[in-house]
Amino acid sequence: MTRVLVINGPNLGRLGVREPEIYGSTTHEELAEMCRAEGLRLGLEVEVRQSDSEADLVAWLHEAADTRTPVILNAGAFTHYSYALRDALAQVGAPTVEVHLSNPAAREDFRHNSVIAAVVSGSISGFGATSYLLALQAVASRLEP
Image (cartoon, rainbow, N blue to C red; front, side, top):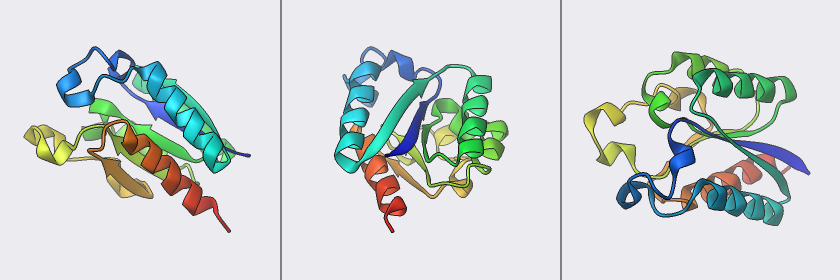
């Protein structure tokens, strides 16, 4: 079974209580369980991690690069300015998907730019928790022979 790493950045551990009108009422643990269940359905072993620390996220991307593990990344606010994440993500060498619960293009101006978009296989946003399930389906389709 192919392992997929789902990485969630700052403030995503607060899902369910943080601005539910934007991010929904699903908690991070519920989201993680949804991802693991969809992964099993797709024949993927899904590991979900969350940190508010940029250093943790970079280290996890280095781990994925070293093991050629596909990555789904919601970098949160780091999406818009973390060149460290961008550079780490560029090294992965396996399918990578940028994911967002909301649609950044429909929000504040500062959210319109993604410094990681140019180095991922694709981006999915605006579908709430379903964005993650779509991202897992995209990764699975990239792995099929």
